Image 1 (spheres, helix red, strand yellow):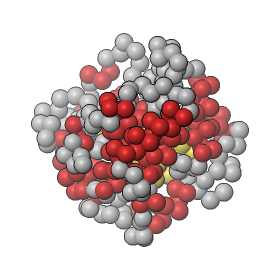
Image 2 (cartoon, one colour):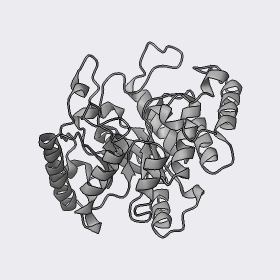
Image 3 (cartoon, one colour):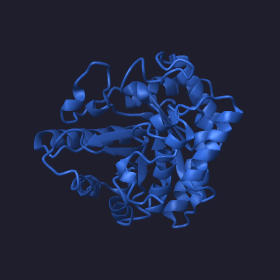
Length: 329
């Protein structure tokens, strides 16, 4: 079946983008960074994590909904769902996390996030190429010569491995997770420049389909997106759960300032009603609803479905992520 991702990417590259072409990925690859807590808490018992089977079922339901364009998973989850032919008659493209750098390691009681990101890959491209052709590669720059060179050598080796298996990828670039000797105000410019430096030496065949990165505010997003609008397609990651208003404002602002992709993990997975959340995300992106109005309608849906919201409406309508306040209506 034709995949919506390919159709939308073609329109973006050809300069024919409309807001209905915005790409949404559900990032259900949390097990690559953590463990038992990856599927999220039970709705009726927040102290108890969901089992892995519930995580897989959430992937099936989101894929069947047709609301997303990409389902990002661990290699183990992708193998199970592709064996089931979940994506065979679906417009959704399955993808896997190709590498799991140390800054995504989130095991309970660990201290890995105190250190610069180090390159590492669990997934074997020869194995995953048997059931997918797309995945995510992650790199984080830390303003540290030794670790940044190591990360770039790892990226170079990955690209050579990728070419041998005729696979595609998109590139994730995080903000540094530690103090790197650069002020918080300077981080967005540093990250933008690192991305462009990283990609400048690549041929067209080696370039990623698109980026996945934090939303660092209107100025930084617009700067990067306007650099090469058809050649460099920018996507935003979701970060923490936040409020429902945070989620809707993030997609609204990202699209407004040039992003064409949203890849959300916890914001979708930890929502009371993930399908309704993504449905309203699309309504906000397409200008059918404002972010504040969308929160109210989302809560109305929860009420109709007998689902107790995690926050009352007033709290859930607040913007709590500082980076979103600059362009908040």
